Image (tube, rainbow, N blue to C red):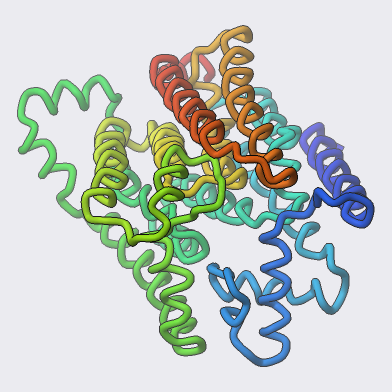
Length: 406
């Protein structure tokens, strides 16, 4: 058996063992191992089995396809979904390996990148707690791989499916569009942009046959899936799975830097100024990153950078959102010029900011102590850590390092 197969089987065994542990833990402890969202998924699946809408389950705000694939939770075993998410997690690792090889790295380098995901403790815990974001990560990586291999129609189908399952990949659309015919190195792009910004931008936006394939396939897939679900569940589906997320607020404690602002203003709807200040900085950064790294070779790093921005600036932020960018770090590792000490320092900084948040969150959730201000301060610290990580990644990114790996 190849080393890749061995790592995948071992990673799957670790995940299955944690799932078994979680079943025991939940029976013995007040602090549950299983994510609350997993119970929401299961309840939504129960409604589907009974012939009603999954949206009859309060707080179910996902595609009905997710509830459908989790109906075995009620027929076979309650841990079915966790097993499925763990297997998808291994598929994510394999896609990482395929993408790194497709970009020109050696099999040895690709194997290390695969291992970075297979043995990632946070990825393991999130999947085994029953969170479904590994499915979104799989579709995003699948889209990047298909674009790298220039299967534009299939990439459009995959991207449309990714957006239907989880709305956030729509932010990658412009960068993916720009990457279709842009193979130039980033320095050449910047030089051309400085000479004639408007002319260069219009040239990059001009559609070709491949652009049309990508866009039409994406729209057809997204439109057909949305239309099918709307026919089954009506406006309730549109609101809960799509529209709700556009103006989502969550006054319960979460990692977001905006959490305390939302908590204090929970008695009144968010004003226009608040919405603009929340959304516009994120939009500007996403557009800037799309232009700066929107060529084919730089696309994985572009998507990674955009994912970090979305996570850092999101009005609602929980642990599973970290999968959005953590799954994109391994494919970029061969092009990040980081020493072992620098990588450890970045990891420790990010984890320390996250762990520091958990203590006041525990006292609030389980001890009933007023720690809202401390949570807000720790949220600011985590925001700064995310921005610092992004800044370090941008400084360390060397897109032409690929030539050294061939």
